[in-house]
Length: 323
Image 1: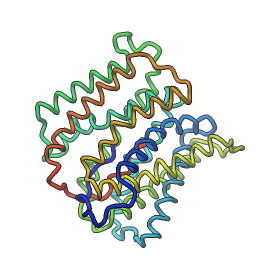
Image 2: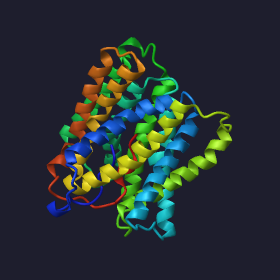
Image 3: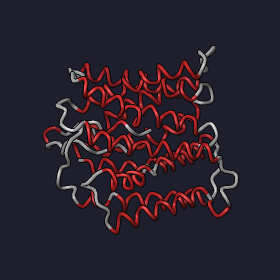
Image 4: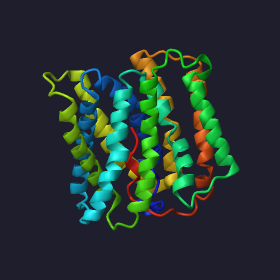
């Protein structure tokens, strides 16, 4: 789930004309369908090419938004250095890992693995962030989430029929997000730049990283199949560009606690999309385990809900980390 480290809710005078619930539903659909788009994109392109295309399209959308709002990128070289690291952990690495993972695992499983990010985040924050201390409820949520993951993977069957490498990549991608969030909280708070400027700059740096890596591991495509090409463009323009703007607006209007609830809808939509549109098979343990994972993730976030009335310090770079 995107990190919710940003400003407090906006005043009623600044509320958008389009009801926030509609934008919340749109964001859930966009991010939920991202895993289907990754699967379709890898039917025609190498994983690094899919990631490069989505970052390029997403950067273009945010560049237009920055131009319209007359936002300027950060000036500090130190800030750019931190953004380069953040772009790796929040964009380049997880996006590439999910693309590689979906070569061998269903998009439904990738979407459920993505839902483990809050669990990883809770475990890591205990070690890396002094202000985050575990409570009994959050530890219980972590344990419940772990049981849910084992249920999804069918541990009692010895993980038979499961591609271990692909699943490990998807779980590692989910782990990469909270690593990036923690780094952002430690290094990019109080930079003076707007959230839009930071997010646009971060996506640009992620695009540069993939522009350097992709030619080294892939060859130039000799054809551009229509459906995979449209999938990659939609993945970037909607799932990496428009979604950032939607999430940014939601956090401003209704606050981070409500906005981050989108996390719990993503695997449901990803599963429905994979089963109905891609014909992926779904055994009983997948949805049951997913429910347990989401329940555990909700418990790990319970402290944030309890203190929702107290605005948290802004980093201005939260909405960049979800598919």
